[in-house]
Amino acid sequence: MASDRNTIRGIEGARLPKAARQGSRRLRATGGRGDAERPCDEEQAPLIVSTLESLEAAYRNKPGKLHTARILRAIYASPGITRKSLVSTCKMRPGTVTEIVARLVGDNLVHEVRPEIPLERGRPEIALHIDKRRWLVVVIFCVSTEMQAVLVNSFEEVISSASAEIPALSDNADFEQCIVRLVTTLVAGNPYPKESRILGVSLSVPGIVDSVHKTWVFAARWPKMRNLVLADVQERLGIEVSIRRQLDVRLNYEMVRKPALKSGNTLLFYWGYGIGGAFASHGEIIGSQTGVFCQIGHIAINPDSVKPCLCGRLGCLESEAAYWALQPDIARLYSDIVDNNEYQAAGFLRDHAILDQDFFKKAQKSVAYALSYLQAILVPDRVLLSGMFLENPTVQDSLVKRMRQLSPPFVADMAKIEFIEVSNAWNAGAIAFFHFRRALEDYIGESSSERPSRGDEGDARTLPTASAAAPSTQRAR
Ligand SMILES: [Zn+2]
Image (cartoon, rainbow, N blue to C red; front, side, top):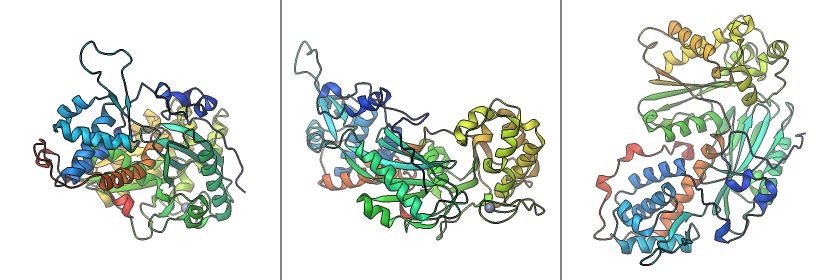
């Protein structure tokens, strides 16, 4: 039975809106419609801005959609922008800007803020802001054996959060109950029930995931959960539910943030509570029909190993090197680490000489072998390394050295190696991204007529081509 530990609290490292930083009571009090309560310190929304850029590229022959996307991007990128500035920024006729902005305001996607001190001459310039309350998504992800849920807006800000520890022997019914409880807690606590639409519930989980059939096939850390079909959960909640593999979501997020990663092959390798990988070729995440891919954590690197793995087999890489397997040794060494939460343990291990320990040297050797196999088979141009043990600079240096030694000729020095930190900061926005992208596509599609508007500059020929488009494989799979 999944234990209940629902708390309305911010998750460490997440970006919080001003109201949320002041606690949940304050948060609940911000549901009003008055302009005075709207935050004035709005920040940019990098994922949405990058998504709109890629949509603009896709709409290059559809001026109606293109103009709506361009104006939305300008308002997301420069909160408080005026109509006059939109005309010059977007290179569009004043009439087109006025028409599109009127529609965005009418649909409550954008709100107007009148300046408090009127300008000396002429009509005061009205500032335009995205209404952050309009679109919200519930995202659920796993940290060690905890399920965390957050309500997030399109600025990647966490509105509220809840979490539950999932015991190792939980079954499908326990998971269904837990997901429903987490979502209903967040929906009930939504401070903007009237203004907002909850676009969906997005799960990002470890193990094997069949996204097309919304099925969580398997996760080694919860072996009694098998083929969890989320259709029932979706029906109970009355909200669309989607599920993706955690490492695919992370790799996709990195590619949206750093478009250079979309050229060539990119491998993401994760060494934390579990061990796994994700792989993209030319910006497309590679998967399989069955949802199994890069299951490197569950093959035996050392054929003599007979250590039992959580998955039920013997001698898997995880049983040699994952945090769950090393926990007893680490706890013996550092009694300070009592936390099962891999993100919190990462901070502790960063500053400790864990590489001096024999048990850890052995674990690292297995990980280096696994990485050299992946490099030889997939031949990535870039390897992104992440996970709680890879925050420690000594561990980083020695792992890279070992990988280079073990990889075959012509492969060893080819890949550029980069470390990306483990934190909760990326989770909410990265997972919700898919819902926001679709909401933007749907809105722009429904609201834009395709009459060519004469006289507007900056037609599609000057825009980046489809190579800048964010990969859509995640949604399709
Ligand atoms: Zn295993």
